[in-house]
Image (cartoon, rainbow, N blue to C red):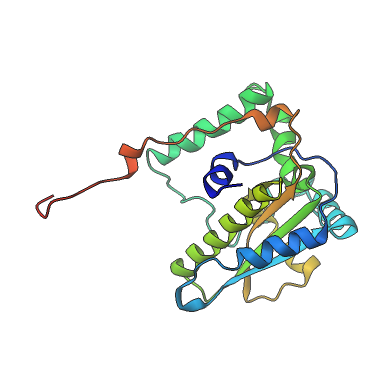
Amino acid sequence: MRVSEAIASRKTVRAFLPDPVPEETVRAILTLAARAPSGGNLQPWKVHVLTGAARDELIRRVREKMPASPRGEGAEYHIYPPDLSEPYRTRRFRVGEALYATLGIPREDKAGRLMQFVRNFEFFGAPVGMIFTIDRQMQQGQWADLGMFLQNVMLLAREHGLGTCPQEAWAVWAKTIRDYLAIPDNEMIFCGMGMGRIDEAALVNRLETERAPLEEYAVFRNTADG
């Protein structure tokens, strides 16, 4: 698969087949993904890979706590800025509405929307669940490095015929994750990711999110005076 094909076909998958993914495949993906650039070659990423009973136990622990804490325990960072401005606020709203429209869940069906949100904490059925962390001393430059590592993981998954779902939603269960995986306090839980074979028949996987046109985010100059 060409890089351009991997980029074009990568999307957030929210329904996976239960087929197991060989551990050697996951190891190969993570090993090559570590070729991501990082300033000073710090390589600030860490990843905890969960399959089988290990994955199921994390899901069980979160499910057990949901009745008392339906919105989680709180993330260790702002997943979105507290006062999100335009056009970002509208983009976020639109993708949420598009998701629920694809599933046929109307705005007034609060229970239906909540049930779909809760699927986050089952890795949407993916047989491989991953939790990514970063050392707390790292700052914006190293968070960019982590992002490039995550992108490599997702594109390499496409090369192997797999889909992924990057999930910052897992950050709201930081305490439970930390306790279960014995993650040291100096590591911040950044996000989760599900990986597996895509359920092509699932309605939710038909969602295609829009992208802003090139003119909205790129400026081309070829003279010194602009």
